[in-house]
Length: 248
Image: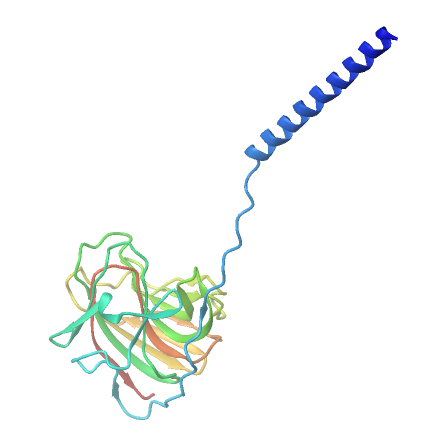
């Protein structure tokens, strides 16, 4: 009987040891297994719908004195406009920390069928990452990377000005959502400190962009085909002036 008792005790101890080893192995496997990434929260751009304002006469979108009616949007919410830009001597000076994604400036009216003239220049040190953009057809909806709205961005990035990016869920025949229709000609930008001109024609669902007199891009079958006008800010120093709409 004593012999059988010792045998049973040994079996219990061996079983307990095996369970402890198995548990340790499971814990080790769990600690080395790749963590399941947390779902990316969907950030929405929720400003109230704006009314469509037809372009029937020339309109200066910037009055040269202040930014009354303009909004700064950061992560989908209105934020302090004075944190990112100042107006002086008829120029909008974009400020901020270089390389830091910030948000976008937004004009209040929905527009369609127009010519848009914009002048800009880089005022800081220009590198391959110096970036910004002109936003067309800005519309409410889910933001790309929690920052950028449904829109078409005429790229102002150094050496790539004239590319057209379909932001968030916007799309056209040349570039689906999130993709880029590359500029069609060699770079036509001017050196840092010199003023560039962008002339953009929106006709129905087609957008044509001309940079310093060079036709750089044309995208068709754009969805959406109308919306607000804005400017993407990525923390780089630049200036804007002479922002004007004229009818087709």
